[in-house]
Each structure stands twice: as structure tokens, then as C-alpha cells.
Amino acid sequence: MALVTSTEMFKKAYEGGYAIGAFNVNNMEIVQGITEAAKEVNAPLILQVSSGARKYANHTYLMKLVEAAIIETNLPICLHLDHGDTFELCKSCIDGGFTSVMIDGSHHSFQDNIELTRKVVDYAHERGVVVEGELGRLAGIEDAVNVSDADAAFTNPAEVEEFVTKTGVDSLAIAIGTSHGAYKFKPGTKPQLRFDVLEEVEKRLPNFPIVLHGASSVIPEFVEMINGNGGKMPDAIGIPEDMLRQAAKMAVCKINIDSDLRLAMTGSIRKYFNEHPDHFDPRQYLSPARTAIKGLVKNKLVNVLGCDGKA
Ligand SMILES: [Zn+2]
Image (tube, rainbow, N blue to C red; front, side, top):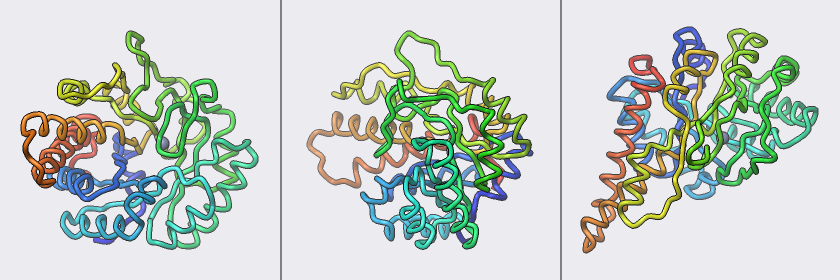
């Protein structure tokens, strides 16, 4: 098995009413935790790398980690650039072996977003690589992407057909109320997503894969593990899992998860150090972190995304 694009995954996910998990990776333990979970439940996977993660871990290391995961699991895995913000960055990932890139032109005007996205699509498609575009702006912070609540905007369904037709993108990220980071909804408020916007998009783009960013559920178990072991995270509310299940049954074919991985890893490392203050072997505290990621991802694949057994 070699790296694959998401084309086949999305087609089956759309027809089957489930979604593919797109998990952010930046080191070996995270890659191992995610891919071991997927292997156990036979799920297809998208592993994604932000520009920040690529700077942190280096392109070649990430490529080789993902190639190793394919050899070990024999699963269909798509390697995706998350939030490419320039043509040059997308080109560099395409030239370097990624099978999918996102060009996020959502901070530009509608016309400039179309123009930039079209340029990436032309380059990518000539080389067998697929492209995700974005319309609408999510609030929150994710590596270099920082959008204040005031600047966030739901996707305007009236724009999606023109955008997809003129750019030729293979999938589209939309903003319906999810956000980047661990603080998605204020404590005491009820999380809400604009399913009406999703429905309207789905009507206008039949059989077209939609992507949800910022879709971590901020699992309380891991927030408590952080705060119960010396951490100081403010109360956080994520996207309820039943909303993600609903989205997966609709046109949403790719659900991005990053913050939940970070929380699971940090929580288990904090717990480990609290219980073993005298230990200093990284293998000792990274093992439970990897196991926590594996457990978390397995639960997402089986109980939230519904993509188990679909590889
Ligand atoms: Zn995102």
C-alpha cells in the first residue's frame, strides 16, 4: 500500500453516511497512536500536517513516519497539508509527496480566494493530488491561523457553487460554528452548530464532500487529567459528539481533530509525572501518552465517525 488521495475515501463516506477522521500529526508517538488505533478497527485515515507541524518536525521526518505507518498497518492513508496559506507552501508539499493539500484562502476576498485556490488546484491536479478549499472563517487559534470571534463568519451557501465550479476543488471546508483550539464555547452556554447552513450547502452541492475543521470534543476526562495533575486550563466546551455523528451522516466526509489529541497527550504525561516525579526516561512518559491517543482515536473512529471496517 502506498499513500492514497482522499477521493475514494470520500466517495464511500458520502454514500455510506460516515466520515473520515483527519488527525493532526507532528511526532512519532502521535503517528503511532493514531495508526495503531485505525489498524485495530480497519479504518481509512487522513493524517494531516499544518505548516507549524512541518516546521517543527521537518518535511522528510514526517513523510518517513507516515510511510512507516503504511508499512506497519497496510491501511489506505492520505497525507494532507492542513491550512496551506500560500501557493508556494502547497507546491512544496505536493512536490514533496503529499497526496492532498488544503489551500485556505478564506482570509482573502471571495474573488482572490477563487484565484489562489484555482492556481493550487491546477498545479495539484496535474500531479494527481487533491485539494481542499475553504469558504467562511472559523474562529480560534490553530498554529499560524488566528481568527478572532468578531472576524469569524459562517459560510454563505449562496457562494458555494460558484466557488467549487470556478476553482475545481475536490472538497470544501465550511464554517458552521466549529472553531479551532480547546475553547469553542463559553462555559455555561449550549454548543450550537448551523446545521441549516450545512443542509443548504448540501442541497447546492450534491454528492460533494464537505469538511469540518475545529471539531474536537474537548473530552472532559483529559481536561480533568490536566487540571488534576497541576495544570491550569480554564473550563472548555468542545463540539458534542452527537453533533459530529449528525454531520457525518450528512455531507460531511472529513472531520478534523487536533485539540483532543493534544489534551490526551498532555493529560497523560502530566498524570505520569505526578505519579512518578523521580522518572526521567522519555519512553516511560511517552508510552502512556501514545496509549491515550490510541484509545481516543479508536473511540472517535468507531463511535463518532463510523468509519471502522471501511478501509
Ligand atoms: Zn482548521
